Image 1 (tube, rainbow, N blue to C red):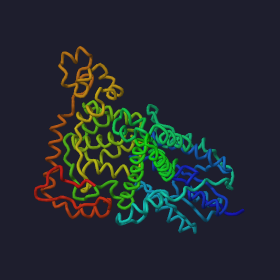
Image 2: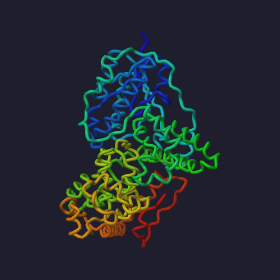
Image 3: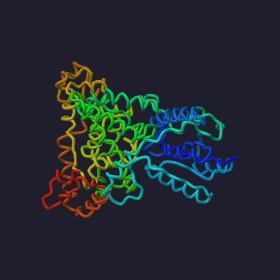
Image 4: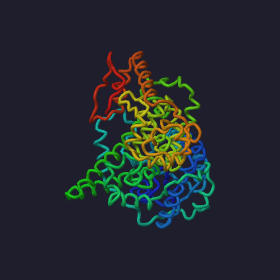
Length: 511
């Protein structure tokens, strides 16, 4: 029997636009493999909702491969042990996979696989699937190569696959045992290529028309956003496929005067697909930003947080006492998704008003996100926490955000039923409602809903003062220049504006 070629599926759970699958089919019978690694699911950023979405995507992949002629093989255990068992049985000499830019755990796992391949005489070939460049030291011409990759034709799925035959255990049975605790109360969106393509089609034909104007508010974002982020995170939908379909639709709408709004929305969407890889490149280029500020001058900034445990608990439970913030926290905790502006607000509130270290809050938010993407997550956590050295600090006012994004309190009441009876003029700051009125409505602040953790204006003022004092005691400019050279966009790169009279609003550069 001809020795099979292993196609190692990781975060590329599809058969369309899958270079390793296509190349492996050309080199012999294939063994399509996915390995469930229990140790990964013990990491602080992994969660049951992510597992549920992954399960859906794996079953969809198995179905697609079965129709091509070879079902998916699923194994569970440490990757080296799985490879040892399969190598003893099939004596394969090639592994094909996509490159992966993930947390340090996956990086160390891939190092282990590389060593295993070298010791067993197995050739491991990795292909790019995103605009991320291995070993990149700076951003010169990065955008050009991203565009070139996205413009290459998508790779058709094989018409037929010759493989090694049926796995010992069908995929659906392999997935019956979860390596992570389930989250029965969470409403996880369904995974898999078919679901992802439905979302892409509905976004490009109708839902995306109001994307540009509606993506900032939680009242409209759930409908007008693409909702493809979780599919990109496991690779059930190709980023290149989404880019090309979006560009094709944008050009078509642009030619029609009545569809100019739709074309503008898709232009914004395309920019965000570009940013997807832009942020992933940061982790690829500097893996330590998973656990340490990219600007080393901010190490230790939040070491002295008053009542750290209590504030973390209030954040986790959605009980800060600021209704709009709590509504966003509870919505995210129960659904696994929230629009970007509200995610940024939550991280900023945690980092400035609560003065919590992003290293402590990053795992909490990661577990909540069904669409957790390490490169984007840790980069954005640092940006919103103000520790990159090259981005402007954005200290959101939770009351203003509430009044702007949820003026009638509709979103607040959906997620905070204890405030359902509070009239609209008071819904954003219920603690200002007279006590007699609170009792009459059956919603007493401090009894049915918690007191605010503090005055948001005063807490923001204190945060700015801490930042200003930190800046005054340190020369942060040299490290900021290093960060800018390594990670900054070459299209909008400027010099950091550090000086003797630097104000809190000038602490970092806005790209």
